Image (tube, rainbow over all chains, first blue to last red; front, side, top):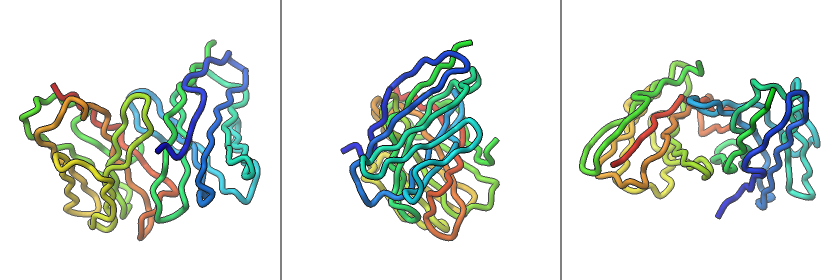
Length: 112
Length: 115
């Protein structure tokens, strides 16, 4: 049973546009929601993470929006750049001591 | 470079072969993990070691055998694999004195093909 559902599977955005990737979860015990970025030939790397006590977290051009009542969270990439082209994974866990449950990933292509 | 090194980068093996994947972390972390990454599937946690002791085994078939001789090294021994085991195998580590998933540092993975 997939614990975290991620959409879309792939996304094409023009340079300068906003990329939006969505994730949904069912387990209300989840309290840690990271996003990982993976470039071809590399392992995933932590990009940004949020806890449910806030509704939004911003780091540079990357923002996580969190909707606890809807059990959804999303990654927004503002002013998307070709260098942002990568696969993005959302994940969720019940916190320290518990394994991360990953989404299936979104392949993002930012065109020049 | 994340400080987690995996070798080999690519491996092709027959179903009757025995091979091993190696992972080394240079970050002083105490927890190490094996993940399996298959196309269009979520990353699957296979094994977790915390202070060299296996703390999690996610119902992985016995043809995969992990070994953690110290907190810096992790191996995955492979034998009599099936073609469906072909995937990218990722090693990761995390800081802390217990299983802490707050920030995983992944290696670049070993791309395994089973013929």
